Image 1 (cartoon, one colour):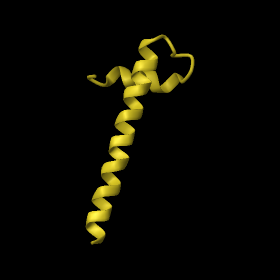
Image 2 (cartoon, helix red, strand yellow):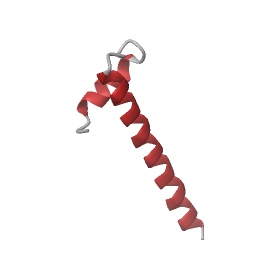
Image 3 (tube, rainbow, N blue to C red):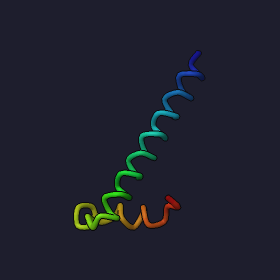
Length: 48
């Protein structure tokens, strides 16, 4: 039972991080690199 909860929580965290990086990638593409300096360098490395 504990293993299922752990897998579920880790999956939710991974999905949230993916969606956050996707949103930041979109923001950086629109020229918002002054908003968050480091995240745009990270999102430049992502394939999407």
